[in-house]
Length: 400
Image 1 (cartoon, rainbow, N blue to C red):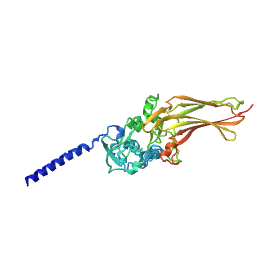
Image 2 (tube, rainbow, N blue to C red):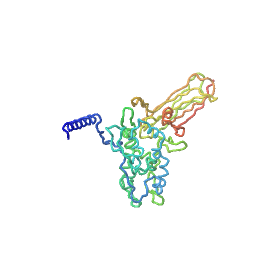
Image 3 (cartoon, rainbow, N blue to C red):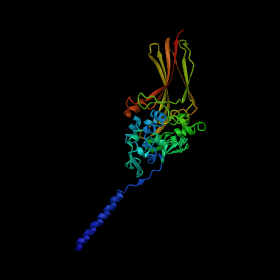
Image 4 (cartoon, one colour):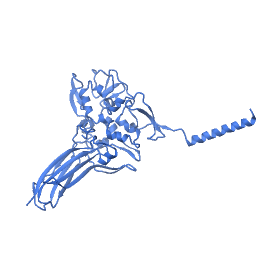
């Protein structure tokens, strides 16, 4: 080889090496940061235990018929298909880990996330899940999400008569399992925050020594675990809560958290006499604050006065709930949720009413979100936003 040609080749190779180093410095290899928080990861893949043919709730329901029918009415069954959740999931600001509470098992997730590229929650390092079960995904918080670990069905009692292997572990199925999802508190980015504090509210609310999540949301009942089996201690699996249905026409179970104590009103008032009303509201039963969970939930207390022709005279509205700023930074602006056992009095009145007959209607409504938020999320009338939880009417007249 010509000496000059060799020198040129060497110089070109050297220049290429320098250029490569410069490019690597400008575009270094991404660093995959491991997942460290429990809510960042799904429950590892679960195999079908011996004795079972499927992990679906429907399959479980072939034996555990009552449990399955109860679960179908629960919000757990809608955890993945819920219209609000799906709307949030489609937003660019929605980080990947939100799915880990709504479909907890790797079996339910189309992709497996192994880490975060350069620690960025919007850049998960993920791979296709070759064993993804789409039907199981649609079931959301399904039977096996709570009851299957390893190669056995976990229960609070255990049984040697079951066709599948069972493990007795009441501690695993205690409130600690509930709180693993219902106490997600973390700032993901300045614009995105998880603020589900029900577990903390229960721990510090005065009821922790008396009852837990299961005491109220999974009432104890004596019944056969499946038809033909002896009766023993079981729990209802409808997980009643707010009572606001996920689909129009449904009637999910509702737990009574608040108690209402209306004041007395006269049947007749003199002209010019103030007409006063009162309503005491107490968080009598809930072991957590009310409302709880999603910070967009709120309660309205509506005092509506109409005349004898049904014409609106005056309306007063009181609100219980949190107020948030979501953009440009997520920040709580206020919070007047009712603590466990807290009682609050709402009072008002009407002055200078004309002579005539009147009706005062008091209605308390529980809301999932306001209409502005529902419109922003493109939710339709098929997605109920509120229910009425208390109503009382007073009729009176103003005359000499």
